[in-house]
Each structure stands twice: as structure tokens, then as C-alpha cells.
Amino acid sequence: QVQLVESGGGLVQPGGSLRLSCKTSRITFTLYTMAWYRQAPGKQRDLVASITFDGSTNYADSVKGRFTISRDNAKNTVYLQMNSLKPEDTAVYYCNAHRSQIPMTDYWGQGTQVTVSS
Image 1 (tube, helix red, strand yellow):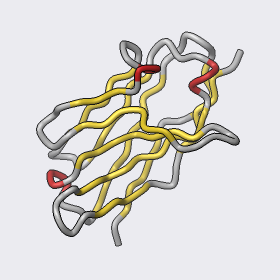
Image 2 (image 1 turned 90 degrees about the vertical axis):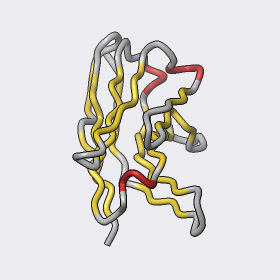
Image 3 (image 1 turned 45 degrees about the vertical axis):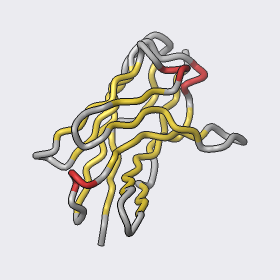
């Protein structure tokens, strides 16, 4: 079955960095826009960043200039480099694969916890 497996989360001090990875399997990776979402306790799941098959990116205002999304189409993997982390970045981060062509499809990873605290 389709799998999206995130890794790289953890505990980091404010100002620190983390790199999340999401390895996909059993999808035609280049047909999907890849994205990272996050959900803090008691809040809705929000888009953090997305990247199309050809590398066009989009970021939430709150992470612009600090986070960078990238993808390696040969490795079927998407990354999120997070720098200058703030306590408000604390959340569970989810990888998403979205296909906008019919049949429209969404797949989700299981999530990885990122905690920014001193």
C-alpha cells in the first residue's frame, strides 16, 4: 500500500534547526504536489509549505525565510529544512501527497513531533 514515512522530528532549543524527511512508496512521485502541514494541540492542521513536481514552492507567512521545502524525485522523498525555530513552531508535522488530476487523491504520513523548547 501507499506509504509516507516521516522522520527527523525531535526536541530542539529556540533558534535551532531540524530537517524533516518524508519517504514515499507506491506512488508515482512526480504526479504529486508534496507538502508539509502541522497541527499544534487544540488547533487545526495548517499548511506549512508545498512544492510541485517541478520545484515551485509556497510557504505559510509564519515560516517564510526560515523554512525551506525541497524534493528529490529520484529518491521519492520530500524534505523540510527548519531554521531559527521558535516555540510556536511546536507541533506534529505531517507529510502530504496531493494529486490534483482526476482521480484527485491525498495521502498522509503518520506525523512526526517537533518540540521547540529551552
